[in-house]
Image (tube, rainbow, N blue to C red; front, side, top):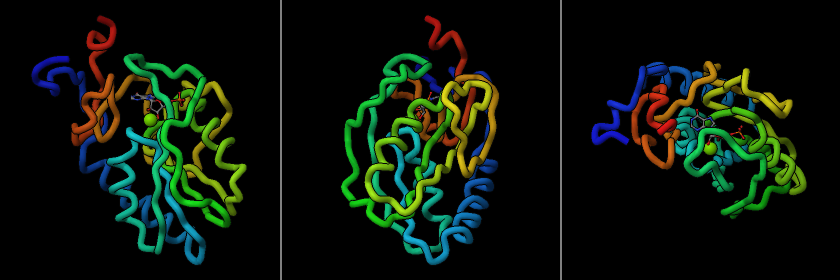
Length: 183
Ligand code: IMP
Ligand code: MG
């Protein structure tokens, strides 16, 4: 990567303002939909931390949060299909209305596996909230219940999303220059 990480960005796809506006609106929608329910947000580390932090503050309801970590790509730009839990949840899921908070739905393999695992734990319901969706890339038939943005099939970084653990701290979402990962 370049000394100046912004120089590795081909173009800004979503600005900070665009992201904030959508996430706030989604928080409002979830506030309506989950009134009287037993809401728990589960975020899949690490890509969804920025989305989780903003989304939970946009939801005006009592809720719990927890984190799950699964094996990732390493220095690659597509997922392998084998998903292993690296850090499990701390909180019991019995009777919980679970909302999985994910950064991006790509092939769908990761979320599909996570849902299979969590379904066995006595949840009242499970739904998915995704910041980004690349519908063209889907391999496993799966769709999010809430999506902030559909995006084209380009590798993006920022607002939590990484390439080889970098760029997560960019405040916007940008398309990574292919020469960064094609080297
Ligand atoms: P899937 O199993 O192919 O759906 O992969 C989903 C995971 O891949 C996401 O949670 C991200 O961590 C990662 N991912 C997919 N596309 C991108 C991207 O464009 N930029 C950064 N990470 C990505
Ligand atoms: Mg991820």
